[in-house]
Each structure stands twice: as structure tokens, then as C-alpha cells.
Length: 199
Image (cartoon, rainbow, N blue to C red; front, side, top):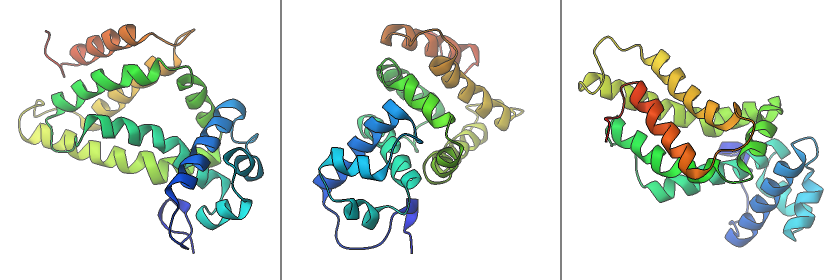
């Protein structure tokens, strides 16, 4: 039976092997997409036996979803706990951290490969993105309840607008933005939405 995130229950985890597998899976996915990434090739690049992968992940998509999530996990570790911050504090964290990620060469290929793989995106949405979206909705509801947002704010529309800010930054450009450009864009966008005060 698969555990949460599509992983199988089994023997204790080897953290070094896990990191090698996730790094290999992420690299192959960025280079080749989901269709071009096989568990056999991941095992070969990671230097582990194929059975190691089969014991840990129920499918290629479950492995790739975990591999992609490592980027978010690393970014959240840099930022620290965000769920109890005010909305403006969370958005300021995004202004500080997201530009460093989106300016990396892997960012655009990663997002386009993910959007081009419906089965993988469904798993990623369910196991990774969906839970974060639910937490962010709670934060928006709290911001409205505590007066950080106007009482008539349409939270679903605001969530979509914030998501659009990030998607525009990642995808709606002929080339990836530099870090300074991305940071300035996020500040302008969040100020235009009335979510950050001008400095």
C-alpha cells in the first residue's frame, strides 16, 4: 500500500540515497520531461539499484512530484515558518525568495515540463501544491477576518490574481527575468493589488 505522496512503506530510509535519487529525477525531468524520464535512468544516474526506487515510490510520477517539491521545501526552509505571519509578511517573504528561484536556468523548463505532463501535474497538485494552496487560503481568510484585507474582498479572486502574478513572472516572457527584475516586478504587482505598502 502506498504511503502519503505515493511512497511505499518499507525499510528505514537512507537520506543520502534519497537525495541522490531526487536530484537525479529532477535533473532528468528538467532535461527530458516526464515522458523522457524512466525509473531505470534515474537509478543509473543516482547510482542505486532500481529496486531502491520501487521500494520508495509507487510510480514515476510520485517520484517526480517529490523531486520537484524539493525546490519548494528548500525555499520554505530559508524563509522559516510562514503560516502564522500576516499576509504582508508572507508576500514580503515571496519578494525576498522567489526572485532567486525564478532567475535560475532551471525554473522555466521545470514549470513548462510540469504543465506538459497532466498525470504528473495531477499528482503534484494533490500531494504538494494543493495542501499549500489550502494553507494559503486559510491565511487569506484570517487576513480578511482580522482587517488586513477589506471586508468585501473576494478571496477566490484575490488568490487567482496572486497566482497570476507568479505565473506571469515564470511564463509570460521571452526569457527568464534576472533576480533584481523579478523582485521589482513582484513588489509592483503586490502594491498594485493593495497588498504591500510602498517603501
